[in-house]
Image 1 (cartoon, rainbow, N blue to C red):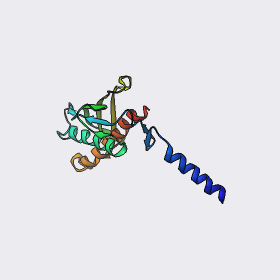
Image 2 (tube, rainbow, N blue to C red; image 1 turned 120 degrees about the vertical axis):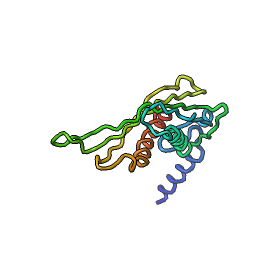
Image 3 (tube, rainbow, N blue to C red; image 1 turned 135 degrees about the vertical axis):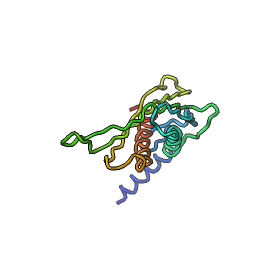
Image 4 (cartoon, one colour; image 1 turned 60 degrees about the vertical axis):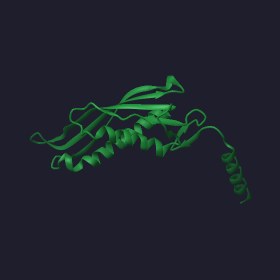
Length: 168
């Protein structure tokens, strides 16, 4: 009993006195280097994309970083910066049934993202990110569009966040 109590005190002391990187959800960000970020309004270059999608993507990335890190949004000399474009927004037919009828529609969104690390230039990158949402052919895209955007952008923002802060 006393061993467990002492072990608990030792672990608590180590946790309290630790300095350096902080971590949230397995992500380490050195607070002595990174304090601020900026997300420029994404540009919509996809022919079929709704006009609000670029803004949705920008806001989703801001929210992801705000909630999953301690970085502060700042458009004046940020430590890191994101720029992006919606490059593709397409619905395709998937899972053909006998008689060549599709039973599932798939909405796919592709975002091109430029990440600039103003503190460590070698960590900057450019990459495309994509994800999809499947829905029945009996359903109109307009009726599931917001749900589809939430799912797709949620996964893409997770991928961007992981690429940026865990370099996976």
